[in-house]
Length: 313
Image (tube, helix red, strand yellow):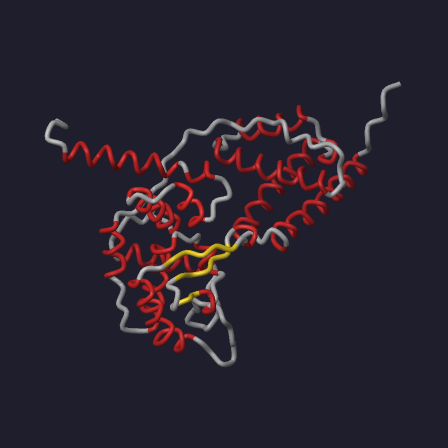
């Protein structure tokens, strides 16, 4: 005798239960893994989309099959989503089911064997040193906001930090005596990055002349970068500052703070740094993540050879 299919009410109850598990997982990402608010929001949005699909299709996500998961991905593809977006959503689903199995909430990880769409490898976008210099030079550092913005951009360029890592900095994380900064990456992993004199000078000027004017005794905080309302600047607030300064300098509006990180890595490799060192400075978990920058450096070397070698024509 074939099993009795669940009623609509039972399916909705199963979906509601699964949503509560997903909420716990999001809390784990935020409070235990220490992922940035932007990343946590992305996970939450991707998982909400998946659960809405499961509800529409009458699928129980707690006991979903490989075939049903492949059907979800096929529906995304038919709806016109890019392979990059589909990959991101599948990654969020994989992470959720892996956590559910680890927590003994479900027994089967149905997402583990699902293959991701193949993506064309794109080289990271970088910024030329001339453009960075132009952006920095366009900032009027005669007032406290200018001092803050120049220090922020100098630090972004000098450290290769993710913008979320910059947002988490406190005044105690900069060690002027040792010329270095302490960064906390994904999962709260700590790393030390050395700083050169120019960025230390910009940071010193901001801390001595700029930050005291932004700080408020009514809102005491050790956060490094403060808004004009004396609040610690969030990732989004710092990103807005970056975009504003890029536009003011007349540079490519499509540039992002992450392009500074790409540039940092590329310049180090082009200057002779080894891959393991760059991996450590960037805070990459895997060396394979860092290896993409070798392609950028090789392309630069080819361009230099074509321009400089007498027989390159």
